[in-house]
Image 1: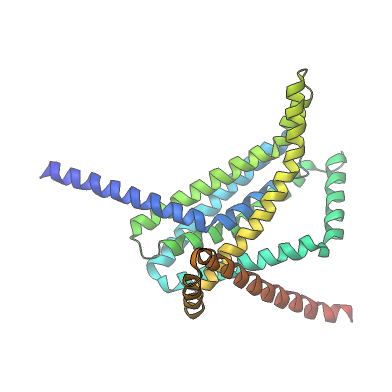
Image 2: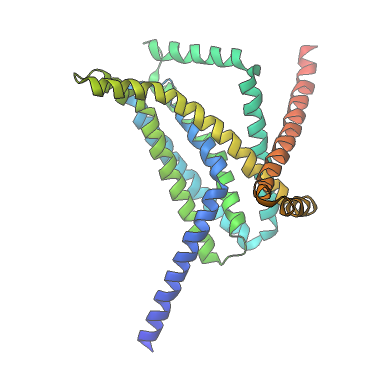
Length: 305
């Protein structure tokens, strides 16, 4: 009996780990938009920090990210255990926020805030170059800002992941949320550390005697800015696909209509749900951005008078 119980326990654990692994992969796919945005944002957060302080800053933010998830994961599990009805509304809010962020990025990219970007960049350059600036305090401010950003993005990741395992057992939910938290944190900040040091690697190689190393170094220096821009673009696109997909599935009639339509289009129909989700995401994000801008203007009117 003891041997049978042990085998049954091992089988249960193996099954649990297998289920957790599969669901974690599903959760990772659904959080791809947030991950891409998280990666680009955090790589940008260390812009303006002196080269020898980049990795310590990334490590400090990573530790803050672990703390964020240590707060968010138990909170999510408590919600799923005692107020499961909140999961869908929270998931919809997370999707709507993703779409809002995506549209804000599009507006930003179209030039609405280029003057602010230039001003901010100039301030960063002056802050790093000025010996009178307290770089310790400056670093702390950068770290706090990055951790606040991480908290919002981590909340989105946890909520989306929770939505994928809402009907699973508590053990599976714990395994998926802990697994996705560790995967995202280690993965994101490991990649951020690599990205922010790419230019240093390229510069180091350009100073070598061998021509082939210099060529690789120049290639890396040319590739690094392109990589950052690509991450930002892909992250924004994924935000619409993921956020819009969540909103679309939260509207059963519309989702059913899209599914029925896609089935009648043959092979092209496989792309229709994603495209429809992206369109829903862009539309929803545009509405939220419009409302937010209207509120800002209404609040600013009394001050202007």
